[in-house]
Amino acid sequence: MLSFESSFYEIIGILAVALIIILILLIAVGLVQLAISIRINKFIFPRFQSFILDSFYSFFESVFNIFNMHPDILEEFNIKLKNQASLEEFMKVPPSKRIVVLPQCLRSINCPARLSARDGIKCLECGKCKIMEFVSKAEELGYKVFVVPGGTFVKRIIIKERPKAVIGVGCFPDLVEGMKIAARARIAAQGVLLETSGCIETIVDWNKLYDKLYLGLNREFRGDP
Ligand code: SF4
Image (tube, rainbow, N blue to C red; front, side):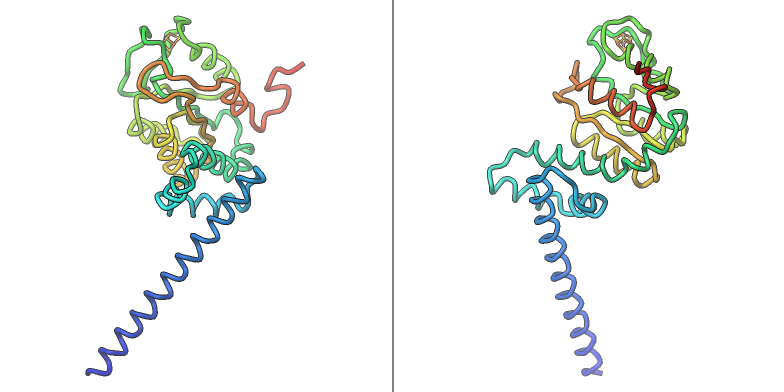
């Protein structure tokens, strides 16, 4: 009985040590890949890298802190990585199966539109912010655009619309969370980080957002000469 118990604990011990070694190896590979990718500004196995980064994000943050590197570098890299991981799939999806999710904080503080529990905020085209122009172009291409107050709404829209691809805009935590939800639902996601965070009149680089809108579309869709 004793020898059975001791061999059982021995096996558990060996498994635990093996697991720790695997974790250390994964982190080491992730760190090397991260350093090389940031240095050469190119992604190496983006899906794997994204998985490692998400799994050990706090650890990578601590390493950045130790080396006095700005956390924005890691956040931007994480979003670029996720974008790259699903880029090919995203480009194959026609605009009619794509949606765009914008945060309500992009609106003008004097926005007259009201929140609907079903569709979020429906732009009334008052022209006080750039959402009006963007929605018009996106809808012309075949997209559906939603202006939403938060993550719960995003989940609801994804369940209702069942898109094959999504473009999301948000601050870092919201965007990463949204992109994880999309990945779990097998939806190809492209994210654009807000240039300023906060809750009102935030700023996005509209050029970056328009570039996402046109991904995979030919000149005829883009309206290029
Ligand atoms: S353009 Fe649309 S979203 Fe922007 S402030 Fe006017 S109604 Fe609101």
